[in-house]
Length: 352
Image (cartoon, rainbow, N blue to C red; front, side, top):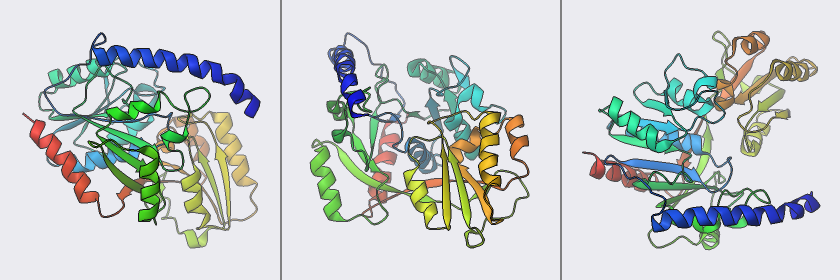
């Protein structure tokens, strides 16, 4: 593995040069970034996935949805459609992607759209839905054709961007100095107990610029939700074995949480945003059936549950207790109010 990474290093240097030239062209204006009259909030990261964008976008939706008419715009990763698509309850993962489906299923009064060209997507939203007052760009940190009014950069506490390297040697999409474009940096997936000493160590590592505000968040897990109506509420004290099957970049925090709630945890992991096949679901069922206790359950994430909605997949799982766990983010150091004020003040001041 070490040898393979060393062999990839020259490709990282080439990739880094290409990205450096691209960013330079945006910085000097040869490539144009378009600013919009309505407030645009960009949520993204420097690395490839796993920093917790989805629950942070949901946090922003909850914060803003009752005061403003907001829209969420994503590229719709791994969808089978092209161009601009406005999601609704009749959409599916193939049409818009798993994260947009999660947003549309949870929030009734928010527009959710996908477009690989975010500039075009915003133009479509504000021309066809003139009531739109603010747009949240999901995973658009490198999409520099749009100039957001407020940029939020996420970094995983267990994999801070200063400790990483450019693709393919590491996981960074662009060089560390790209962090300078962020107005807010959020260190995600910290432990629920997080000391000021740990905070100081992280700040020394990421070295925020004077204009950047830094916040620290951790994940809180909700009650398990049954995949099928009619399943009883899940009581962990009646469970011996949990089979966790996930298609996310980093299942470690969820594993850590579930281990405290059962005698045995078995993880079946797929790649991030994985679209489950019938064969793979049958393999998961086999793993479930091979556990000799009757006190067992299948658990997945909310995002993965969006990719289980194909009729053939649901048919395979209908006789098995399957639950998904919703998550939310909470702020350390009583800084929720400070963060909320930054966001609402920005949207209020920019809203026409």
